[in-house]
Length: 96
Image 1 (cartoon, one colour):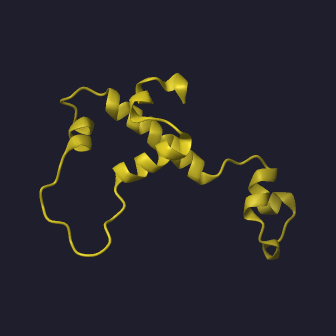
Image 2 (cartoon, one colour; image 1 turned 90 degrees about the vertical axis):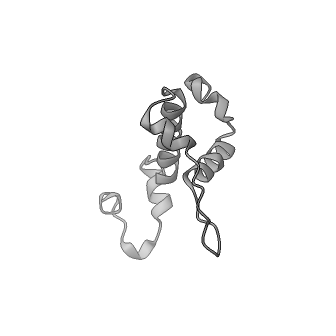
Image 3 (tube, rainbow, N blue to C red; image 1 turned 45 degrees about the vertical axis):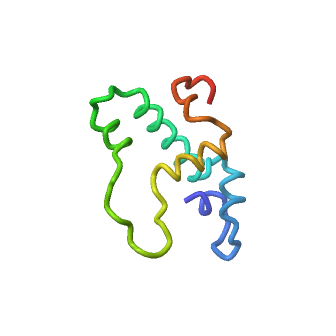
């Protein structure tokens, strides 16, 4: 839609440039922001809440062979590294 509104054909292959020119935030940044919002919600939740129990739940089963899968906690720690925050700062939304 942005390509059509800007008068650019598909042959130009300039998706990132088109998004920047029209002021559209990259999807990776939006996803990162929503994950950090959800993390702050989970960390502030009561200890007996379902989301808190699921967050701290440890699976005792043996993992399959091969490369380990990307887990939600791994993604969160990578997001926090990129933004430069510590998980303890999730309580203070004004910091981020």
